[in-house]
Image (cartoon, rainbow, N blue to C red):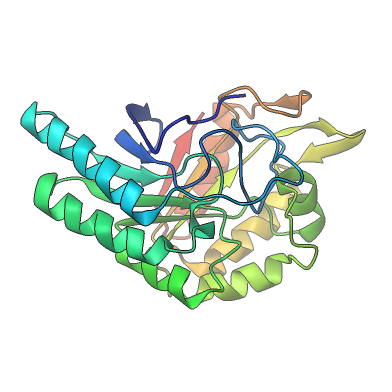
Length: 256
């Protein structure tokens, strides 16, 4: 598993976003997330660790330095991406950091977009929702239409998590978001895992049609996973799912 050991990392070439400069609001030495996904490249959450966040000023200064250096060197950037070692919207100053980032982007790298990769667990908070509505790419996760599948794949920390409440909060964006879904199969703790069955895909597509996001991104495993008996879904299968999304009149990208 791999953690991001700095506040700013990259630029890296993202499968879905292009040349991306990463921003990590979470600790640099452990993962901190409201999910504990069986496929997360950062590994498992560390039990009993007190939440720690990189300060708003630290993030602002580090991002300013990185963008200033890149601009001076004549380098270009497609996107500034909030991801890192867990769920970025957990940060108590998340909205302020987004405001700082947009100002720095406009001043130093105006062609770059600002993206947030979020698992959508905290979008019930008004400040989080406001911040996400400001960015160019508000990318929110939904890996299944069914609670039992989400619990097996994503391991939500909140015992009261439900897909229904997440969908209700997603509706508040009025379609101004990108939906992202990981498709995989395998076993975990002796139980089968597969969110590509007809029941799963039909249920997921019904939610896609209901929510009408600006775009859907579907992908499969590309890196080492903390749960070992997991398997990629073929590009052909992903493309078949994507065609069903596009048949709804919604753009869909595929990363195999």
